[in-house]
Amino acid sequence: MNNQSFSHLLLRSIAMAAMLSFSGFASAQSSRVVPKPLVGPGKVIVHSKFGGQIFGFDIDQNGTEGLLSEAQVLPNGNVLAAVETFDQKTGKILKVVIKTETKDDFVTMGVVGTSVGLVEREHVKGIYVVKRIFHVLNPLDSNQFTGKWTPPTGSKHIIMPTGVSRTQGFPEVSVFAYDNSGNFIPWVFESDVAKNTFGPIVKITDSTNFGSVPPPMAFDTNTDQAILGGGTGAFYTHPVIGVVDLNTGKFSEFTGIGYGFVNGNAVDSADGTFCTTTEDDASVEFYDLKTESGFTVQLPGSGGNQYYSGADVEFDSTHKLFLVAQPNSSSSGSGSTIYVYDTKGDLQETLNGFSFSNGNVIPAHITEPQLAKRVCGWARLWRDRDSVVHILAAAEGPSAAFVRKQNGPCLRTGPSANPSWLVSPHAETEEPRGESARITR
Image 1: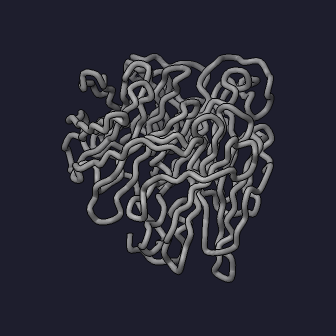
Image 2: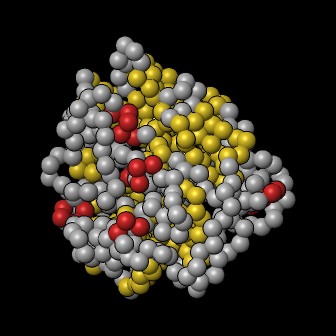
């Protein structure tokens, strides 16, 4: 990336966003959007133990803990870096898994499989990241590194935080490895992180559409396919959708709908519905992967203006809803918005009141701790300062069970979400670390 030294840590800082309450489903056919009353932070606040910036976090959907990494530059030029687990109920740090004061740092890649934490350690010499080591916490509530994950990427392919699919409850993940050698031939493969096993490497030879800019990736667990949102991003050109069969190693692609880069995507594995957002036209696309055809829905009030284009997309499999993040709201006078669509493309709800830092939204990840047993409505994380993560509730009254009352009654049921937005990727191997990098496409 050829940037200056100062702080590659800033390249992976997390920007979070506060969200609004939701009190009722908006009509799917209505073009009018009714703003929801703002709900402030709940009582649960997660602080990094040593006050450093938070570089990746996740929540265990099948347990009670969360995982984060933090780092800060010390006066002597070294980096205080640490990995910590925290209690979802209280927000308290449970255990400092590791703490170093070298040039190295850590990045939380997520929680995968069933309660398996995955953390990357970046070993630094001078201004270069020369080695990447992936540590596993299996299970997460062991609160310690229990082994290593050793993907077959070598030094020329880099797995960024967005390159590991978030499919908790399913043993395998799909992995996208960016080609940093200059050949621009990325790799995609499947892995069981807990068992440290790997499927065949599929080389994506279409460098034009998938090699220069890492595409967003969704993992269809039913068909065992990684779905890539590619394309050149040239103004008003259609995207290209890549399909990687992780069993056979076959790669195919088809021309998508909408215009410009694919900013975000997600898949409903049960029904084969694939949802994307595109950069140039403020549209949301819904595909049938079997027929490779689909339709577009314009974000409410956007008029197709690129300024209002959507970003990340996530799928709530429990309630079969797609969540679409919009950095610049077209439904409110300011801030950012999340739109909730069903799998038919009908708008179910509009949530105003976000504030996505720098307009970069990569990616929101949805978690459902204990599902409906303990969570009613929406819960999410928001970082308003470098070292603080708030767990918020945006449901009314006792519905805010996750942050205020663990076993309280529910006024209504709905998806629960803990979005996190990573603003930028790792510093590249054998490239200078720099101060900033713009990743939104």
